[in-house]
Length: 420
Image 1 (cartoon, rainbow, N blue to C red):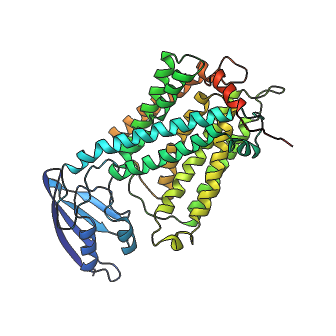
Image 2 (image 1 turned 30 degrees about the vertical axis):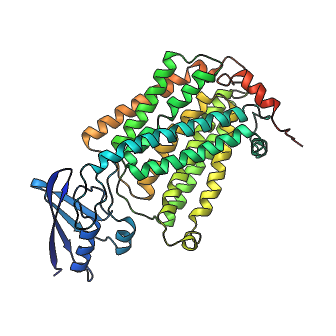
Image 3 (image 1 turned 135 degrees about the vertical axis):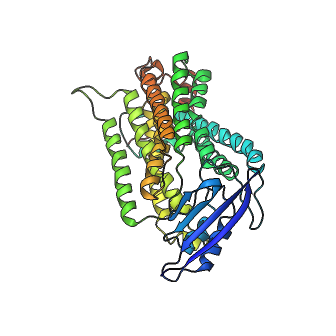
């Protein structure tokens, strides 16, 4: 008969006392030492994102039963205390209750940093669009586009802004949870529309603002409510192969569709090419996010890191994503390509997290209703924006969101581009 070892852990979380009743069943030599490791790794009952194989059944007065079915020592060492996405509890030291006000003090920093990240990524899109709009060969897909762009100072400014945005995002995640930071990043759409309103050649109408706000709010509310949590650190090779082929296969299909005419003898419109390539880019970036998560789970220094496959796949898929993004920004209006960047990326990353890492979304009845409403608002915003003059433009080249004067100035200082 397997032995049962019971441990009661008490701590203060957000000013209230709770009691946890841990019950583990020793399987294959598992003993009370394993229970002690759980106790040290999870000092606070307010942490709701426990190891993937630890089942929680909550009883009356906050008493819960934890049944260890197969959680390894390595997972405990690497993950430490795992938190549900929207938890604001701080990391508590062993034997010390977490500070109830720590989460509230750090939250403003996380919000400001997340907004700064959104502003930087929006600036990156605008700068790269200004550089790509004047590049030759808008109706083709070629590696030569990057050779042209790397010689454009405005494009390099955009890349630097993108890197700065990534730094702000990582720093924001240091002070706040993913469920707090990720929805705020959806405001990138609003920053892009603000740029278009200030420097664009056409006026941003009220209906355009409503559509952009609906997309940003819909995406933000969905990510906050779904709040992916749990899961494990690594996945099987089969899962990665299937996910990689599926994600990149869809990106290839979307890329090919961007250049296929709907009717014989007619070329795809600039808006359609930009929107479809934007979706392809979002899919590719979503897979990049999954690879980054796998990469971040490896500890032990550069030697251990570069002995795995993840850094090499990250470089390859990251370069592919940059190439897709450059063609999307070259193809047509920024209002057409940007929704694909901002919306598809986190949605694909969430789906891959569920499949690859066995993360789980919040699917309680109330959560599910809110998520469906948020997705409906997101879809309405996309459909509404697709009819906007900002997408279709008044110019045959589809460059309406970029001022003609700025395009001329960029073209005047652009490095010569050879096609031979």
